[in-house]
Image (cartoon, rainbow, N blue to C red; front, side, top):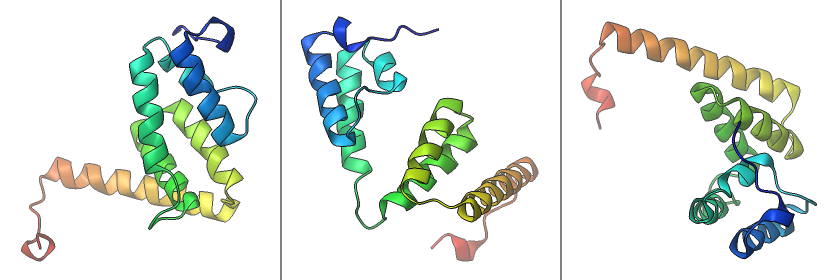
Length: 129
């Protein structure tokens, strides 16, 4: 079990990141993911900075981004990320139907990816463009 750094025990630079996360998300405390990263303050700060750059609305809306994050988390088998980003996607409006389709796409992609890799299927020239 990793060490989790609570706010009361955190270094000042960790508290500053925690305060930024709490303010941005409107929550009273940070998730365990951030508390685990806080054992190395530079990683905590860098990860929060990167997430703030990648996840806000842009060409992709926040729900699509959360669903993509969820799909990658499923493919990578990260139980924490699956739980966290399922909750985030639901909070941004993901419906049961969308979740079901997401599961179907992730499952199908995983199957066909493995088949193509196992069979060493060469990439068609028209897909190389």
